Image 1 (cartoon, rainbow, N blue to C red):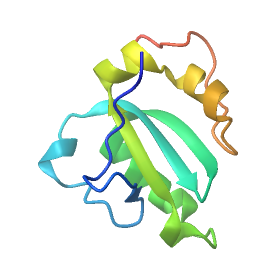
Image 2: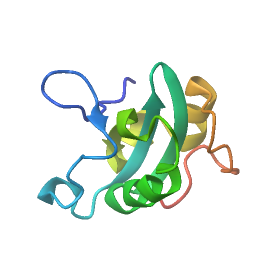
Image 3: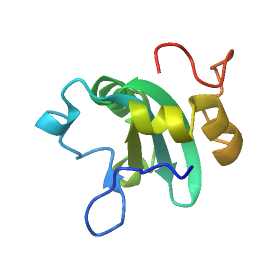
Image 4: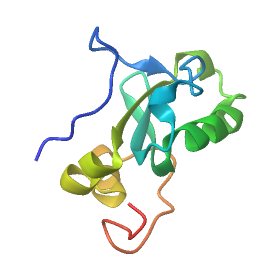
Length: 109
């Protein structure tokens, strides 16, 4: 199954540094997300999307490419059906974020 990644209507990506994490869309939203820099996948993660992305803003603030980091995400149901965190990590081979272990679809996803 193909994952329905959330992207802006123009088909590009949201910028991690400015995406509105207070928007009602993020309320209680859990799932899988991918952070990009150019053509490289930096991080694949899971959990409460707004809280995790806010933490990553702080984690990645010192990066020289911080203002150009892009992010996409999929809801929990999309993630379960199409791409658990580990299978996304295997597919996209992120630079950071290979800390998850265990089942491809953890119980909380």
